[in-house]
Structure formats: structure tokens, C-alpha cells
Image 1 (cartoon, rainbow, N blue to C red):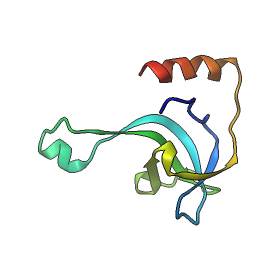
Image 2 (image 1 turned 90 degrees about the vertical axis):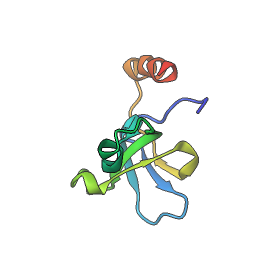
Image 3 (image 1 turned 120 degrees about the horizontal axis):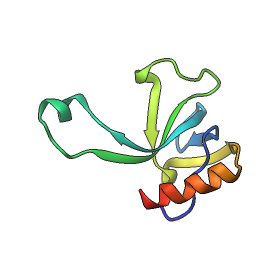
Length: 94
């Protein structure tokens, strides 16, 4: 993704979705149980990690990884300040 990442706290609706998600992580590696068992290095990187809104974190099974291209609508954009702007630079390098 070339543009900036959405900040944590952003609420989005995914394409084809009917439930809002709140972003609480960015640049997330998805490690599947079979990857651990098979000792594979084939990990998937996703732009965002989100939880159901307004419920928030329930458990790992109710956390979702997705990419910017999967977002159909930004409902609310999370807080931005100087720290967020600096962290955007870190995300671009990772």
C-alpha cells in the first residue's frame, strides 16, 4: 500500500460486510496453526487487524485481518497527532 495507513481507532465497513470493524493494529502477520505445525515461513501480511464495533475485543476468533483494498467505507477516522505521523514513517519502512 503506497498511501498512509488508517490510524488505530478507525471504524470501517468491508466490501460485502454488514458489521463494522474497528482497526487496532497495522501491518499484521497472520500465523496459522498449520504454518507452525509444518514449520513453514509462508506467512501472510495484512494491512490491518480489526475487531467488531462496538463490541471490541472478544477473543482471537473475533479478530479479523484485512487489507486496505477490502474497505468499502470509512465510517470514522481514528485520532492523528505528531506521534501518529511519525509512526506512519515507520510503517512505510516495514
